[in-house]
Length: 83
Image (cartoon, rainbow, N blue to C red; front, side, top):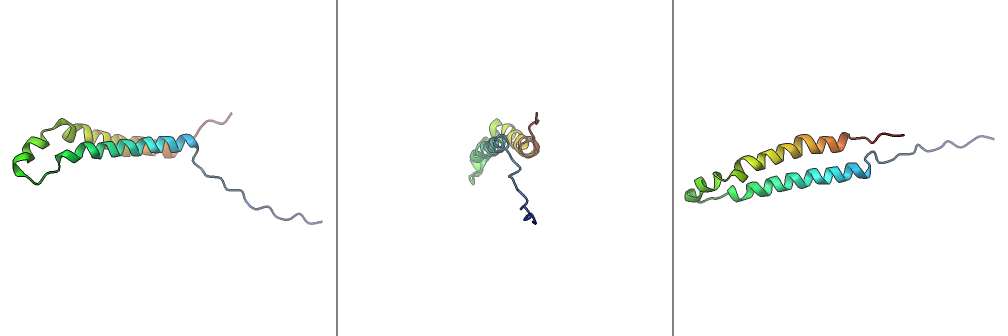
């Protein structure tokens, strides 16, 4: 009697922890862009005052780099140890 071939079993490669970390990374990126948002203006008088804001000039780019370069890759590459 021939045994029917079994279909290969596919499972989603990311665990729940990976998805939580990915959501945190996306949240950090959104916060970074929201902090940069007040610095966008068409009024030339407000332009110098707004861009002198430390949130728009320093904190926002730091959050974006952390989100894009650290948290998102870590979330995609992290694997839990199997015991």
